[in-house]
Amino acid sequence: MLPDWSDDFSVHHEIIDQQHQMLFALAHKACRIANSPSSANEVKMILIEFFDYMKTHFKDEEQYMQAIGYPRLEEHRKIHRTIVADMAGMVKNVHSVEILKEMISTIAKDWLLTHILQEDMQIEKYREEQLEKNASCEVRDVKHYYYTCACPGKEHKLTESMHIFVSNSTHPINCKECHQRIHFKAQR
Image (cartoon, rainbow, N blue to C red; front, side, top):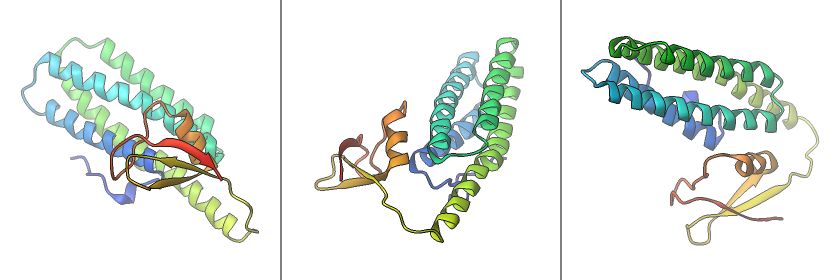
């Protein structure tokens, strides 16, 4: 059985956490399809959805790791490439719906449990260590970038690394309250 998303799995990055939540939801959906009578088309569609979202997430996560100076970025990139290549290879060479359903369940469980709950938690551990180190250092000027959304008078204040991440993200970044895309306003 797959775990449900909880804040224990948070990397304390709003966008990456939202993507992880979506991946948890897709993994649960994949397991439901794998464990019920499903057509070949249903199986194919969840695989495509999971695969496409995973590739996008990997790209965004790698940009975040680069923005925070994560020292294991290249190693993490290799893990991402291996997961994508393994998934593509397995799916391409299987023609039985039942075997595909077994693979969906395995991919969802193994990828979700191994990758997010172990590998991605290392990113959070690194981020926390950096915060602790910086807490004892001199306070330095931090650049902030301001974004707006559809909420009246609301501003989203982002650090430089978050601004870089949002600027380079392949998905629109939305406000949690109004669910509308945030737009760059200015740097103060």
